[in-house]
Image: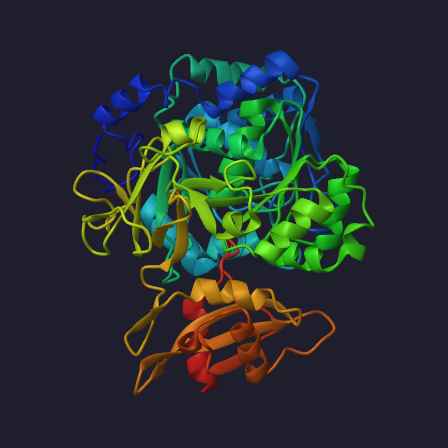
Length: 571
């Protein structure tokens, strides 16, 4: 296995030549780029709808509601690329982009790809601190944004966080505004073609630098090449069973693995329509599924739970075109999957991924039983497994005892998941990569999993290596309790966390959000429910905190460390 080289600073390519040669020889990497894929789609489906804004776009940001076919998307991207060249952005330059899910964001990706600029998308929730961290690590030449997202002054916050040497340009409003031009423009075209005669982006060049959510609140840059993203896109397309002409609805910010690997890359790889949605508003989202005749989408687990409990809401809409639904970022509930599979007729796909390149999925084909698909993932890429397909042929993974490189092969013993293959990055931007990879190049995910199933062909995620609650020497995974609590009819969202105890070291607090229109159950009611579900007594919460909402990072994951601080302050 080719090992990664250190990523000490922003580089045009981060992959060692030995890794490039090996993955190219295996057919997992090639010469295709994102803008090259767009050119292919223009050649064979130019007039088909490529990208569409959400119907409520005008309530969020300035600018027209856009619906671009593939030919228009290509022209818009090339025109923006020429404008960026005119403003001094070129090959290898880093550009921060902070935009909601609007068509301009999609155009930015292809424009940067065309001229070989490195695009670094940031969640709109990021403030001055996170932008400052990105500035220090990336040294960008510019930031692209909008003047405001609703009442949040995105450009103003960014301007104050960045030195004067970094330009801040906004779309559709503000000084020196950028605009989307989807018409042929001879002047811009000549400028771009003249540049491309001198520079030619490579598939192994860094295309994006995304930012991890992290557990400390400090973002870390994740450089990824075109080849890494295309490998991820193939695994997602296979799990979602994407077909040419499909219509994909993306509600996740197009700044991370779920949206980039699950939607942005596949829509141009396969030839689909990408319909945008953001921020998440259930009535608008459900309406889009019906109105846009969506065939595939991803829905957060909490929303799926609500819909499974409310068939009257589900039946208000015509979802006849929808073939399957993806979810992830947290363990799913078996009862919810059973409802969608057997009552609604819309199978659920459970995705497990990360910006660094983890790429596993549990589908109706690989895990037919809801109990398995909810919390287990096929050991794709492992020897002697019954799986087939692109994902199984590309990825590699194993588990080791935490803090070691001793492999675990027996079921039931938790260990850290290691990952390798063409989807995996080469290392975080800057320093801090000492413990990220093993001595032979496997990525340490930090996720605690165990081999499970009959036969033992699956992994079960039992938590993060640092998330485990230690109650008097008994190690408890908070994730399994989260799932049980979320199946309680009186609870909309739930997560447990540790709080300090003088005798046992740590005890468990249940943090819950009441179901709409009701009151959250008390601690006694919660524990009675958990016991009925078969949870061991030593895992029962000994404190409860009722919240209006759970704290989540910009990517939608519950911030357990924030809950711990809240519980401490609550006493």
